[in-house]
Image (cartoon, rainbow, N blue to C red; front, side, top):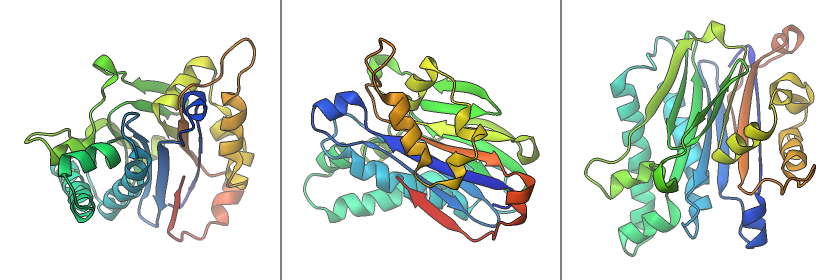
Length: 259
């Protein structure tokens, strides 16, 4: 969206690396003329292939929110999020059933993921979630969760339960008040407990090099200073108001990125 820059990255946590497991986090964003939507998803650690659902979920949620996020949209409207939920669950259901086998087992192995996201429209901005993670607005951080017994809600439970989890709107405000924001997984929240994350939106290099956020996360996640390193995967997407010279050169073309 005109006037903003976006970047993202992800790193595999020590606990997953030791077990020979891959990164179960994912991120995506859609940057169009009328809306900028950024989403981070974290696959359930007990799901054998939950990284699949995390990658699909990040893209599906970002696309569904972006489709309805044009001029005049009220991000606080309950039926807006009900429509997003229905669209995402409809696609997940179609994919899960096409894979064959027992639906519950397929959902539990592939499609359990948390969601933390942000959307900026022409007039309003919103933070939303299903599950745990991290949001930072203009430098003020809020940790979402943890949940009892380390069991966050997963949107795909809506395919297995009559009344499954729904999107939670964390905050809505004027887009003109947003200078920077960050959405992250619970691993990013663990990282923020150890050190400030200001450099991710303050350093121009994070937006100039598409791999810069991942590289910086890799350095921060390493063991050091007597600490064991970051145990969980850590993923974040950061948005900031573009400097005047950068904003003047933006094309406004829609983009999509994922991790």
